[in-house]
Image (tube, rainbow, N blue to C red; front, side):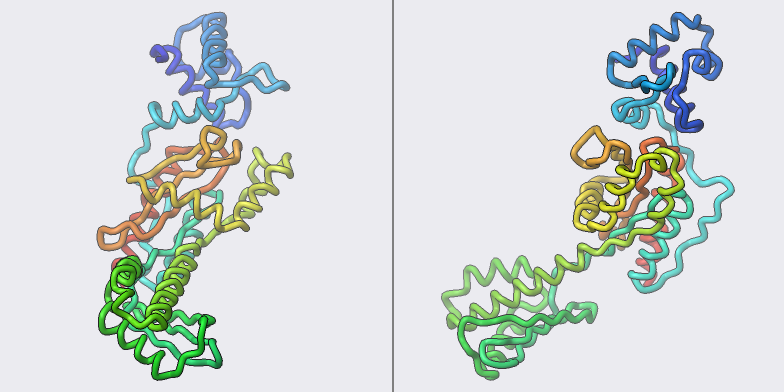
Length: 335
């Protein structure tokens, strides 16, 4: 554990580095901390902090900068975020179609943070309301899946044998009569136990329909809106390192990896901060993510956040993400 003096100096160092972007020397630290300590004492404390892996010394400067571990300690134990964003217009998001709400939210996050805003689309429950099979040709069947909200998914499947339209209608009727309104997972489980009571070809069609529905829902859950990627071009921490910029833009193009990062925070309550280099959650050392889940009618349905450099004003980002998550939830609940 750090003593109070070491904690105070580390807090001051992190705050100065976030504000100025320059390595912090002992003289600057002495003035900014307000502690009556000799330069030699401050240098000794900085040496101890460096030995603990909380700060590091760039080769080009006698000053020190925070490490990911130092940022983590700062964020977890020294950061205090005040409610509300002073001087910033955060008018409520207007109730609208979910796609438009999340697009507006991503842009709002980007504008307020000057970094990258990301929002995952609301996850829909994997429930079907109605299903139909239509024969397209020999062993080719169109599956039409209707969700409770009226959303329609169409998929063409290839069957092991040819089916008449009467057989396809029988499979549709059985599914609609006995399984409509259940989750796809529940339908899949019941089919496992009831397959012996069904004709083989009917059971195969019903299982195929469940698989189609599962894949359709999975594709919907992968949607993520990204706004403000070009803001990173103006970030001094990245502007001199084209390799870092390339990796970051690759991340935004590969939405699957971005979804995995955001999915981690959807399982947590409130605002979470992930600092690059300290864990497998954020694979880029120079990158941090401040994220939070958002709720509709008391249920978590998506995640949003800000992606930027590790040298960011975390207290402000927490406010931005927290307020936006509440606004998205309210806008979607009012539809």
